[in-house]
Figure 1 (cartoon, rainbow, N blue to C red):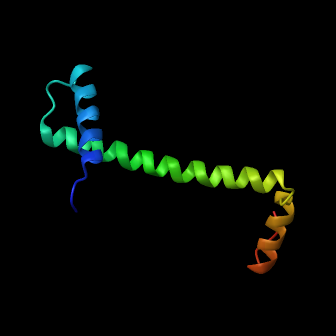
Figure 2 (figure 1 turned 45 degrees about the horizontal axis):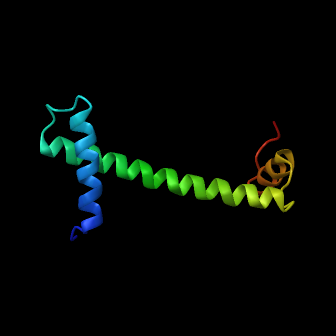
Figure 3 (figure 1 turned 90 degrees about the vertical axis):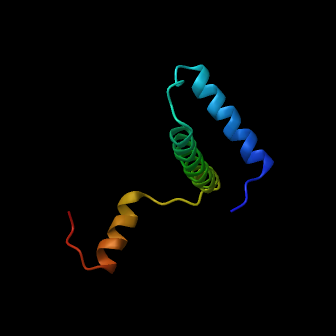
Length: 83
């Protein structure tokens, strides 16, 4: 995977912020690992936020059903006992 200038700039900003906020003893490898973790968390958060926005639009459009109704269908479909 080749690194883009944008990615390099984002890492530089991240590493500079960490070093300026008491992380001066971190190695380059540690900074890269921390940056990758933060980047993955950010991507996952973006996915969750997109799903939530879509769900809100569905609710606002009136495309929802009571949870009890859905659970009854699932119990019937998988032959599960009623609770």
